Amino acid sequence: MTESLTVTAPATKPAPKPAKPHLPDAQMVTTVKHWTDRLFSFRVTRPQSLRFRSGEFVMIGLMGDNGKPLLRAYSIASPNWDEELEFYSIKVPDGPLTSKLQHINVGDEIILRPKPVGTLVHDALLPGKRVWFLATGTGIAPFASLMRDPETYEKYDQVIMMHTCRTADELEYGRQLVEDLQNDELIGEMVEGKLRYYPTTTREETAHMGRITDNLSSGKVFEDLGLPRMNPEEDRAMVCGSLDFNIDVKAVLESFGLREGANSEPKEYVVEKAFVGDGI
Image (cartoon, rainbow, N blue to C red; front, side, top):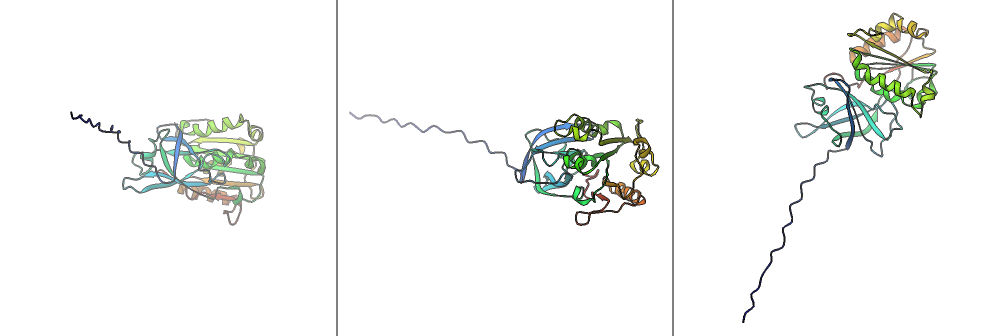
């Protein structure tokens, strides 16, 4: 009698799902906040090896349609002690980068090249009594970093943040940051009495209006804040805005006797030339 032999085929394992490809120099998005239909901020993980001075910028971005990294310079809005990195951006519907970047969500990845550079750092200025942060739009980002850095208040008796936008809602990021700083457990006491916030609008009626250049040239900001006119012995300034804004502000600062400095040659004011404008 012949026994029948039953052969059982091995169970077929389901094919593993393909892993989501990682971006080069990838960092993960941890929070996203949309401030207006034109402005948003987001935070990402920080590379363990990244060291930067508050006020510097890095290259960040996403993969372009051609499969190559599409990168732009973005100031780091968080201070150098923060465990994460914060960025503040405009939304441009047809911008090569921000048309995509504005749609990121928590858990997504962005490309971050960990090589910080920039001129808006304390080392590029000579010692002084007051420092003026002069920004339009998202140009407030490097000052969001510097305002949260204890070194700023150790170096200066007074810190003046002048920020100009078209409308009041576009000032909200900076307004909330300054308000939170005054209640901050880490540097709230250092900020108290030193940080002066002077927001203005150019299109919507608010308590303070006008361009930074006009408010400086006319002396209105000095009168409103009870401060003397800028002078090279006491005042230092940092500038971040569009190319046209930078040129106009430089002329005003130099009319007060301030000279432009750099990392290699500190003087009375510095300008961030890598600011990303509305074409991103």
